[in-house]
Amino acid sequence: MNYEQLIKRLDDIDPIAYGKSRNFTDGAVTQLSPYISRGVIDTKTVLLHLVKRGYSYYHVQKFVQQMAWREFFQRVWQTEGERIHSDLKQDQGAKFNKGMSLSVDHATTGIEAIDASIKVLKQTGYMHNHLRMYTAFMNCNLAGFHWHDAAKWMYYHLLDGDWASNALSWQWVAGTFSSKKYIANQENINHYAKSSQRKTYLDCTYEELAEASAPVHLLESVDLNLTTNLPVAAPITIDNSKPTCIYNYYNLSPTWRKGEDTNRVLLLEPEMFARYPVSDACMAFMMEQCKNIEGIKLFVGSFAELQQFTRESTLYFREHPLNKHYIGIEDPRNWMIQISQPVKGSFFSFWKKYERQLENQFK
Image 1 (cartoon, rainbow, N blue to C red):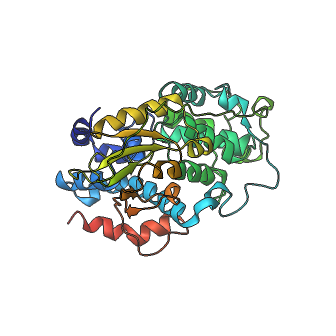
Image 2 (cartoon, one colour; image 1 turned 45 degrees about the horizontal axis):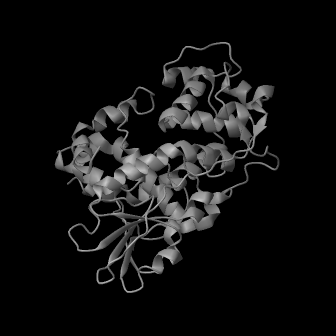
Image 3 (cartoon, helix red, strand yellow; image 1 turned 90 degrees about the horizontal axis):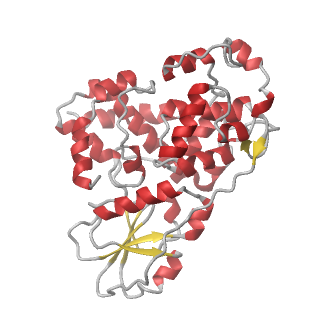
């Protein structure tokens, strides 16, 4: 959809129904996340749209809180940097399996709701958040694989792939960014996934599940070979009498510096996509969103290589942890929450500190 259609879609959000049903796989989710992750829109825009529609904070609190989780994860990435690739608060365990569970990758865990959601993920790039937690639980806490490889696997397929949200959510499930490991039994899965499966290895109490050994079929590992197929770019020309706005996988905002007479370049760095590979579907979704940005040109190469074409041009870019090597004028992102210090600790300490700021925007 184009940007105008996306903004109109904000009118279809039912934040009250979302708050009541978001944990159910057939709940009133918005599916705006891919557009937020690619920077087409931002949480601030969504928040202001709710204010404009006249909602009270009381009625949209749960919806706003979920957007705050996204900003929290991004702020932790800002604070921790490379450390988010490692167990942040405590080790997952002294021993864990390498790679990820082949049964999870192949959607053969034997838990119907989880297997169906993995197939949908690979077909569409979408997975409900609760199923993401169940999948991470299966791989990390039941099968005993470390979270990092499987987090990259999920990021690879998700249209809304955001490394901070994805990696730190997997760490939360694995207990490395939370106080305890997350587990779910068959009753829980049936309840939220609207399934009715019984007599599985998860059909037991939580006490029994905490002591249970993983089924043998979950323990076979698969070594992932995730690669990104980058588009082929035509030779680029830059008008060095104008400034240049640099876009990337995390910033495709059609409103950023709109109306200014600039070169507009989508920079796709092979090194970044080698480290954070994405599927063909994710790449196609990103390229489709570029159509909202008039006159944008594609450059495939490093930032240093792009500089060879922009030596006389002032470069603008938006802040992001993956842009630390960019040189030029850094614009801030359009945050919903303005923080007063680096973010550490739990989400709920973050929420307690800044909720009033959010509430005040509805007054």
